[in-house]
Length: 432
View 1 (tube, rainbow, N blue to C red):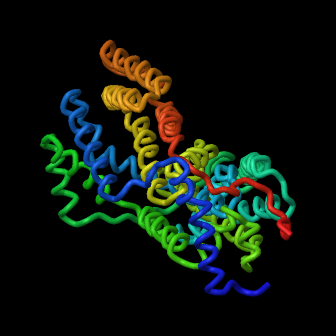
View 2: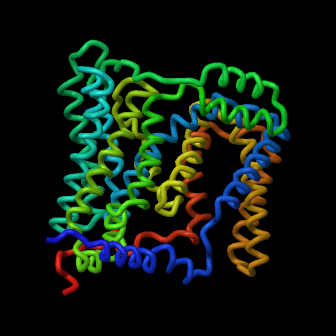
C-alpha cells in the first residue's frame, strides 16, 4: 500500500475536522473554551477553595503535603488515561487498562528488584505493551467486541500475576506469595530553596497567597523522576497526535477508518501501534504504583486506577489537557483517604454544595428545569449534611475517589464527544 501524499494528508485533516470537534461544535452550538476562560475558571476555583479553607479551618486542603500526595496519586491515573487516549483516538476502546497496569506492577517490580529501577520501568512498559498487543490482535485482527476483550484481559492479568508472584516471590527474603522484596528508590528532585520558601509561606495560612504557595510547594518538592517522565509523555502525546502527520492519520482511524483507508492509511497498522502504546503507558502507570509510593509489588495495589484513568480521559473529552485536569482532580480525592482526610472532605462538602447550587441557578436560567431541580436538591442535601455534622465517616473518605468520578462525569457528560468510530469493529475494505 502506497504512503499517503501531502494532498491525502490535507484531505484527512479536513475529514478529521468535519467529523470531529468542528462538527460537534456546530451541531451542539458549543465552542471550545479559550485559554483565557480556562485561566479564569482555575483562578475562580482557587479563590473558592481558599475561602472554604478560611471558613472551615481545614488547613490541609491546600497544604504542600496534600498537593504532593495528590500529584503522586494523579500520575498513575493520568498514565492510564493517556493510554486510553491513544487507543480510543485510533478507534479501539481499551477497558483492559486495569489489567495492563497490573502487568506493569508485576513485571516492573520483578525486574526492578532483580536489576535496577530503570530496567524495571522498561520491563513494566513491555509487560503492559504485551497486554496491549493481545488486545489489538483480538479486537483489530479477529474482530472481537472491545469490551469483552478488555474485561478478559483484566481477568487474565490478575490471575497470571497472582500465579507468577507465588512462583517468584514466595521463598525470597522479605517476599511473600502476594508481595515482592523491596525495590530501590528511583530518585526524586526538588527546587533548591524555592520549595522551602514556599512551605514557609504556606504555613502562614494567608488567604489565597498561602494556598497558591502550598500548591506550588507540593508540585516542586521531592518530585519523582517518573513524574517528570509522565509530564513529558503527556506533552509529547499532544504534539504527536495533534501536530504531526502521524497523529493526523491515527486520529482519522478513530473518526472514519473507511475514508482513511481510501486515502492510503494502513488502518490496521495504526490501530496496532496505538493499542500497543496504550498498553505501554498503562504499564508505566503500574510501575509508578509499585516503585514510587510503596517500593514493592503488592497484589491488588492498582485499586481500580485503570478504570479511574479511563474516566479521567472521558472527563477530558479525549484530549491531553482535559485528561490532566481530570487526573489531578481524581488524584486529589484519592490523596484525601491516605492522609486521614475526614476534616478536609467535610470542608469540601461545603464547596461542592455551593457549586451544585450555582449549577442549579445556571440550569434554571437556561430553562433546563429537571437538571436544575436535581442539582438544587443534591446541593441542599450536601449543605444540610455539612451543617449538621463535624466530620464524615471514614468509609465515605475511602469512597471519595469513586464518588468524585461519578459526580464529575455526570456534570461533564453533556460536553463530551468521543471519536466517531470508537469501539466499532473495522474490516479492511469494508467501504468498497
